Structure formats: structure tokens, C-alpha cells
Image (cartoon, rainbow, N blue to C red; front, side, top):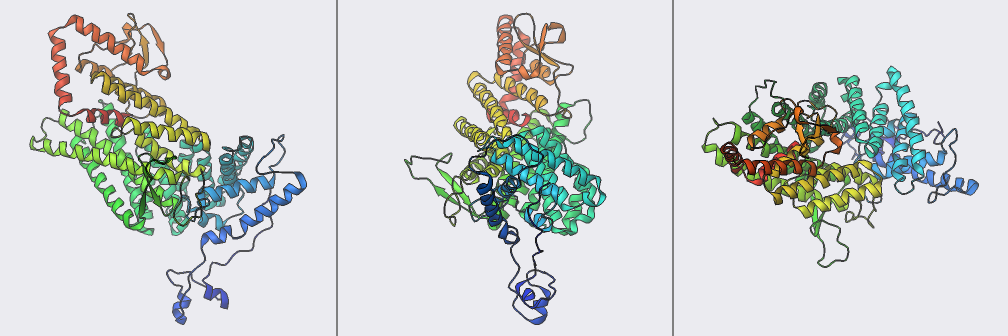
Length: 623
């Protein structure tokens, strides 16, 4: 592969006193042992960031300028040329430096980027070919949002990085290097921008590599930082695909605890998130697979979810001290309103935004679980103490308020996260950036599907996701925006057409879950949606929970015997299910039987126990 230039001399990381007298520095913190021994005031150590960016930017500018003089290359108008045997070295450097600038250094702001653990790895092995290629690929695909002709170059560099990573993994010595793991993580960023399923595969690969590195890896600070990243990614993947957090990673987490600060907010957040993923998967399995005997009761699940919820409150209290932020109110009548409700928050760093928002995001998920479990306990556990019902209802109201508050806080971070505003110390806003969109899409999606927000707020979230898709070229953002459009339609129609249509919303969400997640455990999937005689689409399947709901709510379940033509689940729409429900409502009104009236009573008994918010919470959780 092209080299980035002549090998660099290794820069000393000793404290200033030890560098001056050229003695060996033990690099202890907060003061080195040599300074303590000689009773000198230790001035501290150089910033890892300064060591990385000290010469790299100027070197690239000079080299790029020289290249422009000789071949007419322009960074503002890159000409698409036929593929050659190698990538222009200056173009590779541009991709690498854009990655470091946008994802690591925080752009033009004085803050650090949210991938702030990279300097430790990159400074130790900056010439590792797989690491350089993977970061350059991400930088180029990010730049492609402004210069689409770079997509071909980015994919060429991505293919090169894949080959180099495979070569590294085939070598026992190279496979355990931090630079190899960092390369895999970077390639995951590339796939996250492009495709969710591919990103999940990369995350699983990174997790397998972390496990293969064993417990001894944690003696290095860089390994702990990368473990935190892999843990966060695999937790997100587990929650979205309804899978428990892997046991082998949990064992490594326990080992890593010995080498990290247990009171650090980011560490505590990671531990709570893994518990949330496992809780979510356990609840889904118990709810959907009735044939499997799970000893844990709904009350037990509720107790665990409330404990996790309390843990997040503790983490947020720590963050208030460790990473404070300020709130700015936009002037009334401003021509350019950039916030959702007239105010936004400013954080010291992008890393702080990531910590705060990930805490809020997972807490919202836990709150949805709490709402769903309260509904389950109230309706399916008759032995639950009557005096506890009022407490549960009070807990439900409190949880809905928490969801609303956390959602508003996430939305208030969006202007800074997208580079529309900057911290007070910055000379000017850093401008729209890809890393901000990458960081915010799951946060926005979680808020958008929450039952605790208004329709107008959801539309604002959808607009932001579509904007991220267009400006940052992140395809996943557009897919999530489409999902929120569907969810918004369900919520609105469920509220306007009556409670019975909440069933349609829940059902379609179940189907969408079956489509989007590859074979999640315990989720019942109807084999198809059908068009039986009478133009009434129906859903059938053995022990299908939807059919059980139909029986409960006075609707006649459809079976395979009543089908004619089948359609793929991807073609299912809310209108299909609504037409089916309308047909059954008409059939029910004609029959007007006492049995149906009894079913209506069952419906009222079940849903009057909780308000509409709880039913919508159920829909959001299943989705």
C-alpha cells in the first residue's frame, strides 16, 4: 500500500523534566517517580492529541499542495478517474486526516471527538497498514457525502482494509495487537454508515476478537477503552435484535473491572446497558414463546427493570458533576430556529454528548420495559397485592415523565451534536459533520419511537434523521426515519380511530420486528398475510399471539384454511390490517351476539386497568 511518508522518529512521552536531563521516566500519574525522588515539581506529560496531530496536518497540507501543483489535483473538486493499481497517497492521507479530524479531534471546536480513545492506539502503531487503510476508508466515505465521486475510492480503500485485516488475523502475533482490533472497529464505522446488517456482523467479529485476546489484554489502558467501544456496539446490536448480552463478554467485563475506575460514569453506563439487553431478551422470550417454561415471573422482571432504572439515575447524577452542560434559549422570533422547542444544550466535548445521550437512550428503553411490565403485572398476575396497584400506577406516571424528560434532553443536544452550534470557547461553529450524525442516529430513533412524545416532536426527529441521511450520506438514518414514519402513523391512527386500532399498531410492529431482525428468538411470526375471500386480509399461524389477541378482543382469528393468495411480510401495511379489522367490526356488528359482547367486556376490563399511554408503551416496546 502507499506509504504516508518517511518513518517518524518515536516521540518521547516522558515528562518535561525527564526529557531535559534525558533520564528514564516512569510516567506515573499524577507525578512521575523521578520528580518525586528529586523533589521537583512535575510539569506533567504531553497531550496524546498533540503528539498525533503535531506534524500530521501540516504535512498533509504541504504534500497535497505539492501534488496539486504537479497534477492539478483539487480537494474541492476531485475528478473521477479510472481505477488504477493504487490509491493516490494524497487522497489516502486526506481520508485519514478527515477521520482523525471529524471522528477523533472534534472538528474545528476545541473539544475532543467522541472516539477519543483512538489516540492511544494510533500513536503506538501509526504505520500499521490495516489501521491506516480502515480509518482512511471511513474518512473517504464520510467525505463522499459532499463529493459523491469519492464513494468508489472509499470502497476501494475499504476492500484493501478488509484484505489487510484478514492478513493480520491470520498471524497470531498481529491478531492480538490493539491496532488490529482498532481496524475492525473502524471498519464497523464504515458499515454503520452504509448498512445495519453488515454493521452487526462487524460488531460480532470485533466481539469475537476481544474474547480471543483474553483477560491479559486489560493491563493496557488502550485495551480497556476499545473494550468499552465493542461492549457499547454489541449492546446496541443485542437490543435491536432482541438478543441477550454474550456470556463470554460478560466474563471479560468482570475481569476488566479490576483495571478500571468503578465509579466512572462511562463504565457504569456500559454495565447497566448489558443488563438492559439481557433483561429485554428474557422478557421477549417469556412473552412470545409460551412453550418454554421460564421461572422468572413478570414481577421479578419488573423488580430488575426498576433496579436498572435506579442505576441510570445514579449514573446521571455522576455525569452532572463529571460532565456538566449549560442550556441556551433561542431568541423569540429568531429567523433560524435550530432546536426542537426553542432551547439547546452546550457540552464541553462530543464525548460528553455521547455519554449523556447513551445514558438517556438506554434509560428510555428501560422505561418502556417498565411500562410494559406494569401492564403485564396488572393484567396477568391476579395474585399481585391489591395495595400495590396504586404504587404501580404512580410508578407508571413517573416513568412516563422520565421518558418525556430524557427525550427532550436528547433533542436539546442535537444542534451541537450536528455541528450547528459549538462550545463557548470555539471561534465559530464547526459545521455539519458526519461523526455527529453517526453518534446521534440511534439516540434520535429511540426518542422518535417513544410513546411519551408528541406527533410534532416525532416529525422533528424524522426531519433530523432525513437530514443526516442527506448531508452525511448515512443510509441507516433514512431507514430509521422511514420506520418512525410508520410508527407515527400507527400512534396517530390508534388515538384517532379508537382503542381497537392499537391492536393493528402492535401487530404491524411485531411483523416489522420479524422482518428487520434476523431470526430473533421467541418472536412469533405469522407465516404470511393473506387475502381471503371477502377482501379481508388476515394473519394466521399456529399459536400466533395475534390470533390470541383477536379471541380476547372479540375478533375471529383467521386460519390457513381461509386463505387464498399470500404476500410477503415486507408488503404488509397498516391499511391492510385496518381493512381486516374493519371487516371484522362489520361482521361483529351484524352478529351482535352475547359472546361478542362478553368479549367486549374482556376488552374493557383489560384496557381500562391502564390508560392509553400504557397501551402505546406496549406497542413501542414490542417494536
